[in-house]
Length: 486
Image (tube, rainbow, N blue to C red; front, side):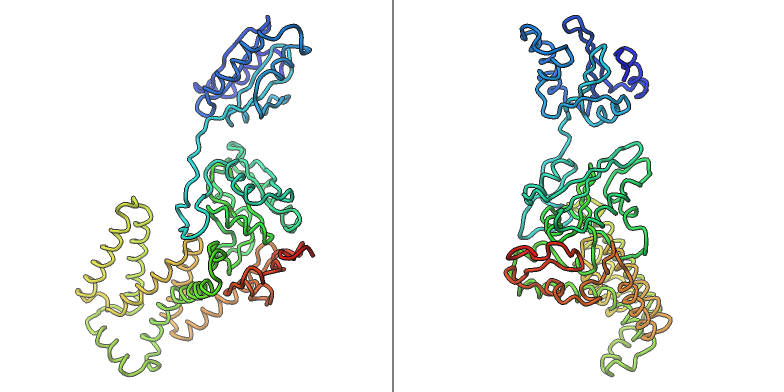
């Protein structure tokens, strides 16, 4: 670092291309040239004026004699700041300035004093907007990185809870934190994730969603392999089971790895309720998943190729409903599904005050008008309504997109090959899911391969006082979680 502060300030100013929000102030303290630099907007002017400048101009005059060896040491000891650091590398100055720090330079010294003076740009902790909460903690992650780690740390007061930081992005230098519990998580998986993060070579990372595809590079799948959540309680439950969590600076969503197929049928609130009631709810989620994927294709295959398997009275009723419809069964189903997905997308994008009302009115009016006009049959409207309502049980957008893909694929197989195509597509889905792995863990665990202990918290939930072991498919360390260590 250049000891001449005039030359150093000129270099820093050129680095930022004379940006107008880079503020530079020059002072003379005890016959020494002193300067402090900060970026307006990310730094708090009140903090700088009331604490840093006040200490440098007023407090230092009150010191009698040479308490410290020189002016640099005097400033270092007299300025009140919990995050004070000494910087010796000139190339690190732009990062700290952009992060809301104030840089203090003293002429003649090859180092700088770095003081935290960040402006509070965060929103307050509020309830999750993307995950409904009926019973359980109401707090959720925000865009403030330190606050997000604090929400996890206040729940897991264990010295084995570890946070490892990696800076990703050549221009954004975004802080990405890997969270795990040292004596539970498999360190091989932790090191693999940290290694992948350190090798990401992009201009910038703006959200946690930007790094998902860098973490999962093999075995592409329409179903998600990473859980994205705003809920700290879900993150803590995952950490205690041996999973690894990634928090990205400026993002309110945490990434949980590995995400298994069974995880998307669970909810953090399952562990705050009566196990018997939870088991019924999980059964409903599984039923809804099968219905939303299979019902349209099954209806098409039966009505197009395999009408003989229907009872005679039902077949006659369906036949009369379709007499006035000029389109094939598959076309009317696809038409209604596309219309519903458009309505659903509108419901997500437009302001919430009008979104739900428009979707309900649009669905009712369009469905009734389409039946009255003879474009679609009443049974087709019922099939699509049941399919769409069943899909609403899933809130993870990647899971929703995976369901959409396989629903369309089932429809295409059934349209061309009937019940045989439906069966073949079902076999392809099962084989595909069974072959998937995430971080060395089978995607269908604990169902395939069968893990008896893991089944205790799959589609059923046993009482907490009987749930004594962590799933072995997630970790082999510290397996006993109730009644001691193993």
